Image 1: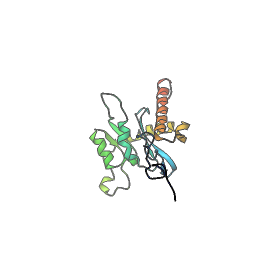
Image 2: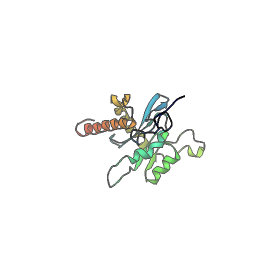
Image 3: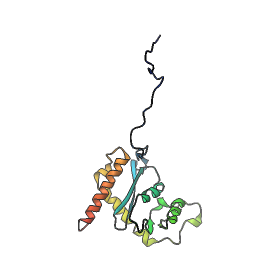
Image 4: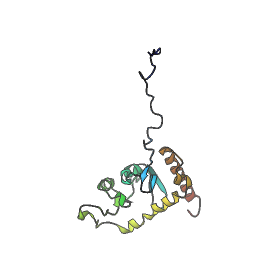
Length: 184
């Protein structure tokens, strides 16, 4: 026979403590499996001069088209024009939801259509601007520069908020380097 002398002994009335941490931290810490292995996707917005403007991190297996709204809403340019005239993206952003969201905000999408579309009429956009799409290499160069930062590539931080802070710190360093040097 067991005698319990304390009223809260055992599991009779266990109290749960609130979870520690920031409520903005995603539960998966923006880590996930993709084709390349275990990693994080960096969704980045930059201007035509390869100046990074906004960033959002997500798990590696998540589709980047889910984060177009959040990464564009993170950009604050000024009072006159808060949105760009055109937005270039790769085929990963070729969804009706993304295109309609951009058009609602008077942004012209410069996104090629995917090859796996069911309707053959949607395969080719006759108004697709190839010249503007060729200038998309600016974002690729910006990502390439970001991958030169060892701390960003290897991701030493466990929390997604800390990792995003490191990316923003690298973006600030990039802006300072562009402002105070003759060659970027």
